[in-house]
Image (cartoon, helix red, strand yellow):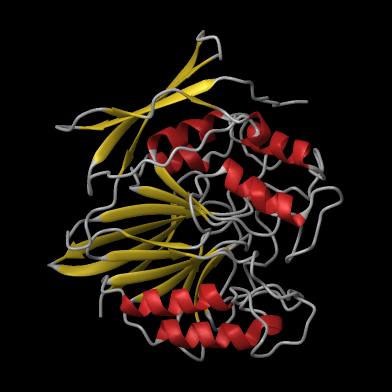
Length: 389
């Protein structure tokens, strides 16, 4: 099929280094034919606040050299290190709705900003959309290989460290919850495929400290949720008991200047009245109220969300919590709202593709968070400035 990038048996070796330190490598390791010919290597004991070079070599089982890929990434500064941080966020992309033959044009535009890291909030690919419908493991893997074989995407990820989250379309299907299969693609297979294809080493939900002024939380919105169809109340949850307790505890304990929850789905909204799948919807209002109230009670705390195919900045009318929706990865993917439908919650609204660019820096020795929405060509559409309180 068009864009197919099938794997093959072989071995890989990963080498990494930073200036002034000894070069380290993994040794030659076999890829796993049962896991789409992938190999996951956890790199540990990296120094904080450094730029690393990385090289991935490949060879056949017989030792015949294959492709070599070179790249770079930055490590997070230590928690007590004051440092300016830049990162970019997007959501909702797939192969059919790419806007150039080389892939989504936001990727080279994001690179121009020289971000420290990248976050994809989920719906990275759509199993339940045609060309083809990924209704089994083989077709799901085909979609991943095709998407990340695109030049813009593959090059981007050699230059920037990335965090990946999943949502419904890249687990099984639209608005799915545990046990919801997509034809022959089972729920458990959908969960396993995400861990197989992306750098998830332990739990899907995690928190990362980036220096003195920033800590982010990435949450898992599918694996632990209640069915959308049951009645709302104290027992209905998107995050599940363990993850929610972990979030409240670690968020409260953090002494980072700015704390940001990055959620696959909206927490504030507003969302369409017909939806019943996220914390901004009536179906999960009880837990949504808990989360909004808690985050709003914390200083310099914000939400970034994916899933919605339009960009916005909104402020919850009850708690004052601010949310940034990054918007879809292309204009072809932008839909679901109207520019004219500006509600009291909105301080910015635009139905367009693009990305969100967050910059944490100091102005006159005061920490400030700058949130910029960009269109697909990289032009700034909106700036939201937030000095630390």
